[in-house]
Length: 512
Image 1 (spheres, rainbow, N blue to C red):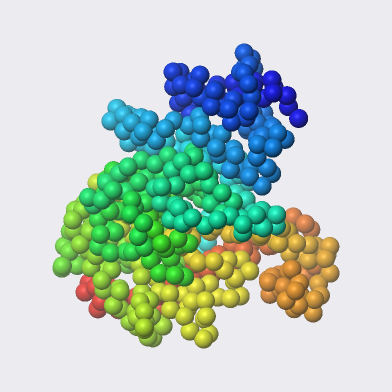
Image 2: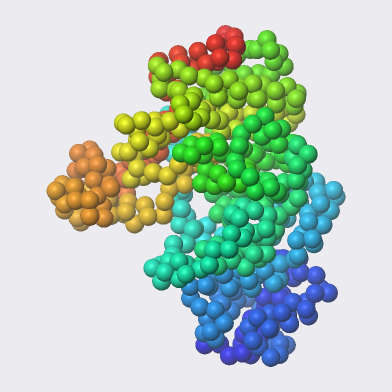
């Protein structure tokens, strides 16, 4: 265990780090030092401040361990305490907002977002040490590149933490993970600490919204725009107005919305919010399969994107026209039924929905509208346009905006499970069909995958070739999952139905 004197030295190093990386004002150093001494129960500061090579392992982690050893916090609350510690040396929201807009005015909006993103990483709101543990690769599929991530950055709670979390009182504050009232919130075992969160006020279609970064960073500069009002997700004409305003404010980013229905929407449908960031998601790089012209919207180009699922693409230099065209497509799709391809817009509830994504290239606005439908039936209890059950061992959760654009966020359990699958292919684990059929077997969910791989490759591969075979299987499964989300399949029947929607529903004329 560190002595108080050693901990005081670490505090000096933390203050030095905050000066370099977190814009700690020189005038606030004594104040912040005293706040940290109080947090750690140390009587006086040290005059020493040696250099360090790795801040996390040499300063942050030892200080948290010191707090655990002294009983200031406990093992279950390490991240909560670390966030509190970093929050003390992160500039106040007012100072962050002032600097952001000063940078935007002086150097341009990209410089401002570069600074805010760097701050969000430096104060560990975006926990890069955890995010860098994620397993990532790309796959060049038949209709374009897709990205695949096995998500290891979201820490799993152990049984002790789960038991403690159940004892936490439920205050209903903040109302959800996305409310602006999260800024500075201390957190608990059921709700992450947010003392390091900093948001920027923005105006979208005359409303107060906020810009922040996602702590999980599924792609570069993964940003979130959230409504100041805690209200349910919706996709309406106002959505397009807000998204178009956003890309005017931040032309180097895209911004999009999950569909506002279960199954085809995101994990949070209770708070209106959008997701965006750098224009790196695979769907953005594909061309158009078919182009159309419209008499109603003469200055808007219509197309079907050459992608795995069903995407109507609009582009125009006229912001008002592309807004009106997108609103028109939304209205038509919400009422469109084609039972020949199982698309029914409504039964006792709405089923058709749209995932819109907006970006700006030069002076051209591009609106991609992914057509979605969340209807279920007896054969497809999880969703007719949801991954088939045979694919649930890879991805069972809802397929939201990030996945439908070609970036898969797969559950962390797959790291261990896929490694176990590989052992069947190089003979370290004997194949026992009867044992895998037992639902109590930990590998039961992968029984079909294991059987298919053994049929194709046998059980005598080298470990490297077994690994490659399993990755190939996952790649193909992800492509199939994307294809499952297509309301108009990429076959003759599906594309004929898509053409009917474009020509009859939207009254468009195909271009040669």
